[in-house]
Image (cartoon, rainbow, N blue to C red; front, top):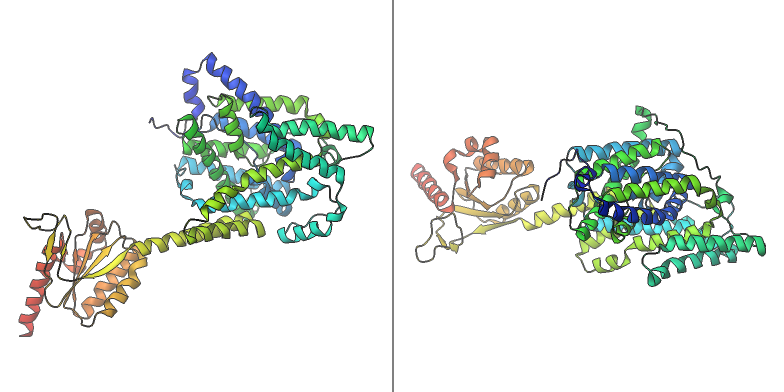
Length: 568
């Protein structure tokens, strides 16, 4: 596979062999994806606490930038459901200016991740964390749409807290507006049933067209009014002036945490989307360049009036299924949205709010991944615990806390598992397999160990790091007599960290203070280099770092004999 430089977008490579056939496929896919993206952009914008045109502007600006500067051939970018809760929370606390600053900072972080080739690190975030906060976001999105879906009449603002929000809903459920609820429920039904009729027709767009007509008919002919976008927002289909947010230190330091959350979530979602796309089109994306593209998009979007954006898996799949071949399809999708924004945006004022709520209910259902959650219940309890903790923190508190706590917990569990895989055992006279040892002619895979009196042999099987320190202490404390020589067999130690070095040094010094010599056996070249760098050859003596167990046993035997002569 050809390795691409992160400084060159995928568009650069695909245009080299571009032809009319590819353009025709990209044109068709771009137009369809642009139409599919329209209702989602409006819905995500409103649900995030901004005006509908900001949602479309984000899809235009970020969609263009991600396709032009990203590392995937078919990735489609724009506003997504995953960002709704983050954006809404930032606006509530810091306002639109704070959101713009946090988004620009997130864009800078994403570019730095790509420039320093850290794109692959994002892939190591444990899957239970991703499933947990994705499902949590889905539940939270659904909970924010209940009021508009059923047309509940609630005085004042709906509480932001999840539990208080649902208490408020139950207390006011008697105020349900039947016409609004009917429009919302029918929107859900249309979106859910459309794929059964045709997978080419975007169900969300069909629902918006039908329910907008229904809303107009109900209002004009029956006097039944259903709240629309125009009742809450003033539609202004013009390009806003570019405004660079004030990135002074006072503004930056208070927004570092939400900016990191935006960057991490954007990186995860975009790379997951690109990876899924790779499996379908058979071409590997450049994760570092993809992060750079995401970063450019998130810097340009707030400057030109948009909100955070990332790769959108549903729109990316729509692009692939409709024949998109290169990033040109994503650029065309942005141009289609731009034309709709200028010429058709005023008609968005007639779209019922409950219809948009229905669109987001389907989005939250698709995000919930309940089948994945059900399957993961069969996994180890530690993974299940991480999943549910991340889910609960996302729903009850916020996504920033959920990601931070989830990552810390996952790291602790990973370290615990590593410690459990490292075993320390005491060896006795035995036959043992060791390809580096002197072997028996009749059975070249088996060595015969004869351990001299007054010698203890410990074997470490696994990484030598902080997790095995107590194992050594417990093992030595259980021995009835103090030996004259301790052999630490390290043939199966792949690496040793700084804590392991410190603990090993303490063990050797403690043994020396008790008159016990220490010999290391079977140390591989990598570990030996680390030990020599830390002067273990001087602490032990060069002869006490042995290449295999037989030489170590002979050295130990010599030391024991030497001790006996001294004591005679």
